[in-house]
Image 1 (cartoon, rainbow, N blue to C red):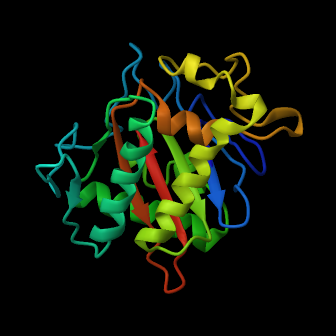
Image 2: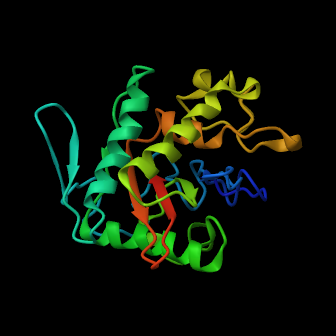
Length: 233
């Protein structure tokens, strides 16, 4: 699911100008969202705000980088391996379009926050609920994608992210790369929210955008946890 603070039941959500979307193992959760400048998820000058995070303005306290450029997350919440797979798969996909890599938005507080969002959403069976409702706002950033029903393993998160990225191959998403420089829900041939019962493009847009620079990856802590969020800023 992609999130942009708009709403749609299965492939995208828009509320107050933010981007969000969901992806499930059998389908996309159908809600995409992202935040435009001037809305409560974005800065008035078009830059992302820290959404109340203190000391987290771009810091990557819980992550290191190998010489190869691979980011390694050493997370105290036990999701280090899957968080490492999350950021590196997103950057691997971005590299196929010569896009600069995202930094991993990761501190112990941010990791806990995005885990809480994924856990809250799964427990309520409601994609993007915590993000849209501001239940754990510190890590909201300006956009969210969400995986539903994938195993919280390295292969599971890679499968979800690959499925989201594959939205670019849909006919109504052919124009999305041309609008990567600025959020535009009306970008020609880029049906961000999947309106008119067409496939959505929002997950791919969030993952490939040039107006985001960081992503936080969070995972449900339920015993049957299978939901994961990616928050962009």
